[in-house]
Length: 261
Image (cartoon, rainbow, N blue to C red):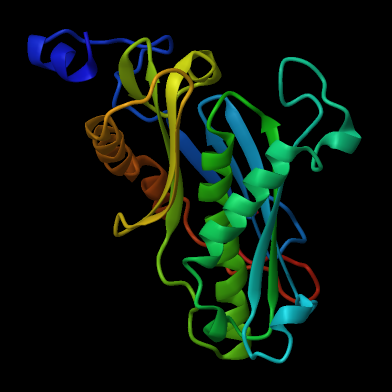
Protein backbone atom coordinates (compact mmCIF):
# COMPACT_ATOMS: atom_id res chain seq x y z
CA UNK A 1 0.00 0.00 0.00
CA UNK A 2 1.46 3.36 -1.04
CA UNK A 3 1.09 6.67 0.76
CA UNK A 4 -1.84 7.86 -1.36
CA UNK A 5 -3.63 4.50 -0.98
CA UNK A 6 -3.16 4.57 2.78
CA UNK A 7 -4.52 8.09 3.07
CA UNK A 8 -7.52 7.24 0.88
CA UNK A 9 -8.31 4.22 3.04
CA UNK A 10 -8.06 6.19 6.27
CA UNK A 11 -5.07 4.15 7.52
CA UNK A 12 -2.74 6.25 9.67
CA UNK A 13 0.84 5.31 8.82
CA UNK A 14 2.90 5.79 11.98
CA UNK A 15 6.69 5.96 11.76
CA UNK A 16 9.26 4.73 14.32
CA UNK A 17 9.20 8.11 16.10
CA UNK A 18 5.38 8.32 15.91
CA UNK A 19 5.30 10.89 13.12
CA UNK A 20 2.90 10.73 10.21
CA UNK A 21 4.48 10.43 6.73
CA UNK A 22 4.15 14.14 5.91
CA UNK A 23 5.43 15.40 9.28
CA UNK A 24 8.84 17.03 9.63
CA UNK A 25 10.72 16.57 12.91
CA UNK A 26 10.53 19.47 15.36
CA UNK A 27 13.20 22.04 14.60
CA UNK A 28 14.76 24.68 16.85
CA UNK A 29 17.37 27.27 15.87
CA UNK A 30 19.30 29.04 18.62
CA UNK A 31 20.88 32.22 17.33
CA UNK A 32 24.07 33.80 18.67
CA UNK A 33 25.44 30.43 19.78
CA UNK A 34 29.12 31.35 19.49
CA UNK A 35 30.70 34.38 21.11
CA UNK A 36 33.02 35.52 18.33
CA UNK A 37 31.51 34.55 14.97
CA UNK A 38 29.76 37.29 13.01
CA UNK A 39 26.77 34.94 12.78
CA UNK A 40 26.19 31.58 14.46
CA UNK A 41 23.41 29.16 15.29
CA UNK A 42 22.83 25.82 16.97
CA UNK A 43 20.29 23.76 15.04
CA UNK A 44 18.29 20.89 16.53
CA UNK A 45 16.28 18.77 14.10
CA UNK A 46 15.00 15.79 16.04
CA UNK A 47 18.18 14.09 17.28
CA UNK A 48 20.33 15.77 14.61
CA UNK A 49 22.29 18.73 15.96
CA UNK A 50 24.52 21.08 13.98
CA UNK A 51 26.58 24.18 14.76
CA UNK A 52 26.77 26.72 11.92
CA UNK A 53 29.06 29.75 12.01
CA UNK A 54 29.47 32.57 9.50
CA UNK A 55 32.74 34.50 9.27
CA UNK A 56 33.44 37.65 7.25
CA UNK A 57 36.81 38.54 5.78
CA UNK A 58 38.31 40.44 2.88
CA UNK A 59 40.23 37.38 1.67
CA UNK A 60 38.32 36.91 -1.57
CA UNK A 61 39.34 34.13 -3.95
CA UNK A 62 41.47 35.43 -6.79
CA UNK A 63 38.75 35.14 -9.44
CA UNK A 64 36.50 37.50 -7.43
CA UNK A 65 39.09 40.18 -6.68
CA UNK A 66 38.52 43.49 -8.41
CA UNK A 67 34.97 42.60 -9.47
CA UNK A 68 33.36 44.70 -6.73
CA UNK A 69 31.38 41.68 -5.64
CA UNK A 70 31.79 39.12 -2.89
CA UNK A 71 31.66 35.36 -2.48
CA UNK A 72 30.12 32.75 -0.18
CA UNK A 73 31.68 29.39 0.57
CA UNK A 74 30.97 26.61 3.06
CA UNK A 75 32.70 23.74 4.82
CA UNK A 76 30.85 20.78 6.34
CA UNK A 77 32.19 18.14 8.70
CA UNK A 78 30.99 15.72 11.35
CA UNK A 79 32.63 15.62 14.75
CA UNK A 80 34.33 12.30 15.53
CA UNK A 81 31.46 10.99 17.70
CA UNK A 82 28.55 12.46 15.77
CA UNK A 83 27.69 8.88 14.76
CA UNK A 84 27.49 5.47 16.42
CA UNK A 85 31.19 4.83 15.90
CA UNK A 86 34.09 7.27 16.07
CA UNK A 87 35.42 8.75 12.84
CA UNK A 88 39.06 9.89 12.62
CA UNK A 89 39.29 13.62 13.23
CA UNK A 90 41.72 14.10 10.35
CA UNK A 91 39.13 12.72 7.93
CA UNK A 92 36.21 14.76 9.24
CA UNK A 93 36.33 17.44 6.55
CA UNK A 94 38.28 15.70 3.80
CA UNK A 95 36.15 12.68 2.87
CA UNK A 96 34.18 12.75 -0.37
CA UNK A 97 30.81 13.05 1.35
CA UNK A 98 31.91 16.11 3.33
CA UNK A 99 33.36 17.75 0.22
CA UNK A 100 30.16 17.08 -1.75
CA UNK A 101 27.94 18.51 1.00
CA UNK A 102 30.24 21.53 1.41
CA UNK A 103 29.86 22.34 -2.28
CA UNK A 104 26.09 21.81 -2.09
CA UNK A 105 25.85 24.28 0.80
CA UNK A 106 27.98 26.87 -0.97
CA UNK A 107 25.94 26.71 -4.18
CA UNK A 108 22.63 26.98 -2.35
CA UNK A 109 23.73 29.93 -0.23
CA UNK A 110 25.20 31.84 -3.17
CA UNK A 111 21.92 31.42 -5.03
CA UNK A 112 20.08 33.59 -2.49
CA UNK A 113 22.74 36.31 -2.16
CA UNK A 114 23.23 39.19 -4.58
CA UNK A 115 27.01 39.02 -4.64
CA UNK A 116 27.36 42.45 -6.25
CA UNK A 117 25.38 44.05 -3.42
CA UNK A 118 27.37 42.09 -0.81
CA UNK A 119 30.47 44.02 -1.79
CA UNK A 120 34.09 42.86 -1.68
CA UNK A 121 33.65 40.44 1.20
CA UNK A 122 34.06 36.71 1.67
CA UNK A 123 31.44 34.94 3.79
CA UNK A 124 32.77 31.62 5.06
CA UNK A 125 30.31 29.17 6.60
CA UNK A 126 31.46 26.36 8.89
CA UNK A 127 29.01 23.55 9.66
CA UNK A 128 29.93 20.98 12.29
CA UNK A 129 27.56 18.10 12.98
CA UNK A 130 27.46 17.33 16.69
CA UNK A 131 24.91 14.49 16.48
CA UNK A 132 23.81 12.80 13.25
CA UNK A 133 20.41 11.13 12.94
CA UNK A 134 19.61 11.78 9.30
CA UNK A 135 19.01 15.07 7.51
CA UNK A 136 22.35 16.61 8.47
CA UNK A 137 22.84 18.46 5.16
CA UNK A 138 19.29 19.84 5.37
CA UNK A 139 19.80 21.05 8.94
CA UNK A 140 23.17 22.48 7.91
CA UNK A 141 21.65 24.44 5.02
CA UNK A 142 18.76 25.80 7.09
CA UNK A 143 21.12 26.83 9.89
CA UNK A 144 23.78 28.19 7.55
CA UNK A 145 21.35 30.61 5.96
CA UNK A 146 20.34 31.92 9.39
CA UNK A 147 23.95 32.37 10.49
CA UNK A 148 24.78 34.05 7.18
CA UNK A 149 21.73 36.30 7.54
CA UNK A 150 23.00 37.69 10.84
CA UNK A 151 26.51 38.18 9.48
CA UNK A 152 25.64 39.92 6.20
CA UNK A 153 22.92 42.13 7.66
CA UNK A 154 25.28 43.35 10.37
CA UNK A 155 27.85 44.02 7.65
CA UNK A 156 25.27 45.86 5.52
CA UNK A 157 24.36 48.12 8.44
CA UNK A 158 27.99 48.84 9.24
CA UNK A 159 28.87 49.57 5.60
CA UNK A 160 25.59 51.38 4.89
CA UNK A 161 24.83 48.92 2.10
CA UNK A 162 21.56 47.40 0.94
CA UNK A 163 20.61 43.97 2.25
CA UNK A 164 22.14 41.47 -0.23
CA UNK A 165 19.85 38.59 0.70
CA UNK A 166 17.18 37.74 -1.88
CA UNK A 167 15.15 35.29 0.21
CA UNK A 168 15.56 32.49 2.72
CA UNK A 169 16.55 28.95 1.73
CA UNK A 170 16.16 25.62 3.55
CA UNK A 171 16.88 21.96 2.88
CA UNK A 172 14.22 19.23 2.90
CA UNK A 173 14.59 15.48 2.50
CA UNK A 174 11.97 12.97 1.38
CA UNK A 175 12.45 9.23 1.06
CA UNK A 176 10.62 6.15 -0.07
CA UNK A 177 10.81 3.67 2.81
CA UNK A 178 9.09 0.30 2.56
CA UNK A 179 7.01 1.64 -0.32
CA UNK A 180 5.88 4.79 1.52
CA UNK A 181 6.97 8.37 0.96
CA UNK A 182 8.11 10.03 4.19
CA UNK A 183 9.37 13.52 4.96
CA UNK A 184 12.60 14.21 6.86
CA UNK A 185 13.64 10.59 7.46
CA UNK A 186 15.69 9.77 10.53
CA UNK A 187 18.69 7.48 10.16
CA UNK A 188 16.59 4.37 10.91
CA UNK A 189 14.43 5.23 7.90
CA UNK A 190 17.09 6.73 5.65
CA UNK A 191 19.36 3.70 5.60
CA UNK A 192 16.41 1.59 4.38
CA UNK A 193 15.25 4.05 1.72
CA UNK A 194 14.85 2.91 -1.87
CA UNK A 195 14.55 6.50 -3.14
CA UNK A 196 16.20 9.47 -1.49
CA UNK A 197 15.52 13.10 -2.37
CA UNK A 198 17.14 16.25 -1.03
CA UNK A 199 15.89 19.59 -2.29
CA UNK A 200 16.90 23.16 -1.48
CA UNK A 201 13.83 25.42 -1.55
CA UNK A 202 13.50 29.17 -1.20
CA UNK A 203 10.75 30.86 0.79
CA UNK A 204 8.81 31.38 -2.45
CA UNK A 205 9.18 27.59 -3.03
CA UNK A 206 11.52 28.03 -5.94
CA UNK A 207 14.07 25.25 -6.35
CA UNK A 208 17.78 25.85 -5.98
CA UNK A 209 19.02 22.28 -6.23
CA UNK A 210 17.64 18.74 -6.29
CA UNK A 211 19.34 15.43 -5.59
CA UNK A 212 17.01 12.50 -6.22
CA UNK A 213 18.34 8.99 -6.62
CA UNK A 214 17.03 5.45 -6.57
CA UNK A 215 18.87 2.77 -4.62
CA UNK A 216 16.78 0.07 -6.30
CA UNK A 217 14.60 0.26 -9.42
CA UNK A 218 13.91 3.35 -11.54
CA UNK A 219 10.89 5.32 -10.39
CA UNK A 220 8.12 7.17 -12.20
CA UNK A 221 8.01 10.92 -12.82
CA UNK A 222 4.80 11.00 -10.78
CA UNK A 223 6.75 9.79 -7.75
CA UNK A 224 9.22 12.65 -8.10
CA UNK A 225 6.33 15.12 -8.33
CA UNK A 226 4.78 13.65 -5.17
CA UNK A 227 8.09 13.94 -3.33
CA UNK A 228 8.52 17.56 -4.37
CA UNK A 229 4.96 18.36 -3.26
CA UNK A 230 5.64 16.80 0.14
CA UNK A 231 8.92 18.73 0.44
CA UNK A 232 7.23 22.02 -0.42
CA UNK A 233 4.59 21.51 2.25
CA UNK A 234 7.06 20.30 4.88
CA UNK A 235 9.40 23.26 4.22
CA UNK A 236 7.16 25.37 6.43
CA UNK A 237 8.75 23.74 9.49
CA UNK A 238 12.34 24.93 8.85
CA UNK A 239 11.13 28.30 7.54
CA UNK A 240 9.09 28.73 10.73
CA UNK A 241 12.18 27.83 12.76
CA UNK A 242 14.17 30.51 10.93
CA UNK A 243 11.45 33.10 11.51
CA UNK A 244 10.80 32.11 15.09
CA UNK A 245 14.34 32.27 16.45
CA UNK A 246 14.47 36.07 16.58
CA UNK A 247 17.29 38.11 15.12
CA UNK A 248 20.58 39.28 16.55
CA UNK A 249 22.64 42.21 15.46
CA UNK A 250 25.68 40.17 14.53
CA UNK A 251 29.14 40.69 15.95
CA UNK A 252 31.05 43.95 15.94
CA UNK A 253 34.71 44.29 14.96
CA UNK A 254 35.94 43.31 18.42
CA UNK A 255 34.06 40.03 18.31
CA UNK A 256 31.53 40.95 21.03
CA UNK A 257 28.00 39.93 20.12
CA UNK A 258 25.01 42.21 20.34
CA UNK A 259 21.70 40.68 21.36
CA UNK A 260 20.95 37.09 22.35
CA UNK A 261 23.80 34.91 23.60
